[in-house]
Length: 444
Length: 69
Image 1 (cartoon, rainbow over the protein chains, first blue to last red):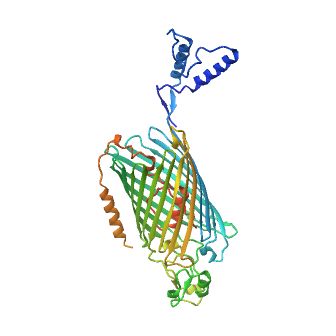
Image 2 (cartoon, each protein chain N blue to C red):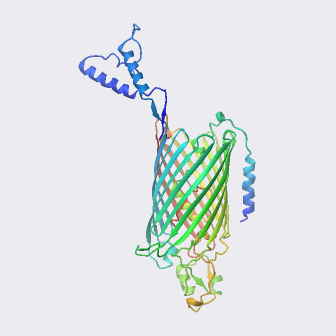
């Protein structure tokens, strides 16, 4: 927080209180105070002579000159309660808080904290004869930016912790405005390190020192945004993410099939069917040890008379052979000064990775692990397979602040439904999920 | 899916937006809160999408943690 010297007169809160107290005392005592008759107490008597009222005003001004500091920072705080549930028996409850402070000098500081409570009994878990499990993830982030004029720098960090997964990351950004902020360039680099371990069904975890897998991630980001016209903004950004390490899940066992059986396994084959036709061996997932990911994202925002249209398109490709397109649209309608309402739509489609197989083939069926002939890479992560997701929903904001600043208090709610089709997968043909969030945000 | 066609369409659409010099006093509409780059979705929605979509990018550099072990 920065305190800024100012010569502007302070609000008359304190004199008003004094006036009210004096008026109360005078009323009780049957005496009308000379300077308690108006808000400012700074007008002259009918005869125009100098009165106690003027003297009171004079003394107040003297006091104000001795205390000329004013807090010019804008503080924000918010809380969100979000929930997700789908027909694959996964539910997540996520309360979170965030707070920030921004100064007129261009400095800002933001922090957030959230807890994920995950409960899962998905087909992938049940297929390994495991019970429903629950897990709690905690994540926090802290970031700061200083942008006094047309050039700014920012730094930040985040930590995420689960019983069997620890991740932390740091990043730095620079931003530069050109042509009176008609266009802006920004660059960033982030580094994160993840450590994955393993916990048993009883909740006991193997220490990271005994068993763990590490993943290091470097992310480069560059973007340009520009003013298209008096009502339109656009931006394009690129991301290059380089990951090194073993991302294979230590819980994920992959069913294997004989060469003549694998082609006959249908999409969405049930757990019982898979167990009846698979080979005895069931090796752990194994993913490539490095991955390069590239994304190009375009954003477009257009302000109409009483609404705002926001569009986003992202195209993505990586060295594992996964290509994707994600389209997101929101049309936000203002309903007077107090409400905003929007429909939301999103469509995501992706190919599978080059090593994705619905039914992996093992050429050796004698059951001896020493002679298993397994594919080098194998996965059961359905988010690495071909799929498409259609999401639709909406939300609203209710501005509860004063008439002068209605957005100083905001109550928001959003709800979306997601339908995902798995086009080449075991256990599931599709998934329907629901996501809702209730938010309260305050600015002061 | 032909990514090249999608990419070309995106670039063509963005190029079509062009740009012009807009003076600061003409930016009343651009200053509307709903025009800002901040997402209307909170951290929970962003995490659900990150876990359910095989793609990434276009978001914050501060993302970390899997939550999907």
